[in-house]
Image 1 (cartoon, one colour):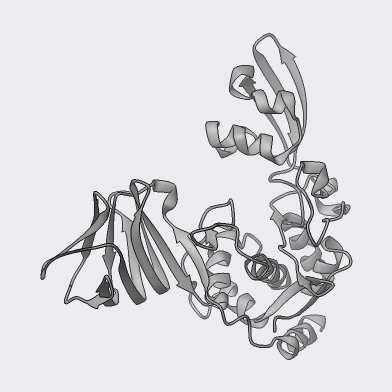
Image 2: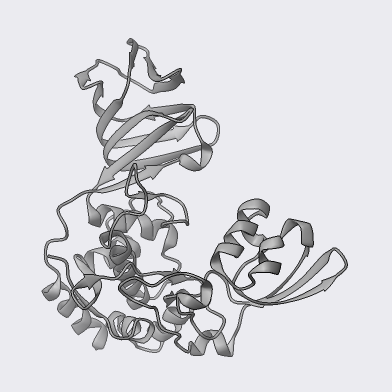
Length: 333
């Protein structure tokens, strides 16, 4: 079966991934001034080891971090930990991480950055972004997510954030889960255009045809992202309608169809306010009637389309060749 030789071929190609750790700013969506840390090993404050046991509470106090545990209190400019730990915003969210943690004050909040190796990061991204179920579709998603991380940083203080602005980061899945297996089978593989890694994008449902970057108002760098027909979404499109006050969505009146306009609206009104970039507008007084198709920015890998292709027997590499013409999936060196 093709599913067997593709696994062998992928493993043969995969080399050691980039040695540099991936630095991800976590929990920043909450703008925390207080965090709780547990399960950490080798806790340090300003580089000095501290004997903190049990849950540790970290609080922003002026321009420093106050560390409290059942063993005492410490104050410093930066707190570091490493190993497998749980970090959370009290009363809101806890998440388990593997890697090295650094917490420091930043503009009136606590900045938490987790550094982890690339393959750990890919598996954690699949925990949230791996919507597919077919093994080959998950393998394609793993290669796309790895390519995005390996292509280069998107933030100044750290490489990537843990939200959909970059890729939604979850927890590292169990070794025997389909997500972890897909990451492991494709270890080290990334999409290349020429000799450069493509910062590959993906979308939930493309609406029947994917977008080029210019179509959604983005400037291509080393890869333009081609407009590719997607049979699955064309045959079974995801249609939606929204009614919005014109005053709440001026960007889509001025610049319809652009990703920047969609992001401006959804950051103000919520992600469900404008699911995608393919839509028509009708204005009636102060009200906008919006009819659209597809979900997400519409560029790159279509997750719904990749799932159907995999179910019909396509391999991960065949899926990637469909949605990323003129690229090749080869090992990071």
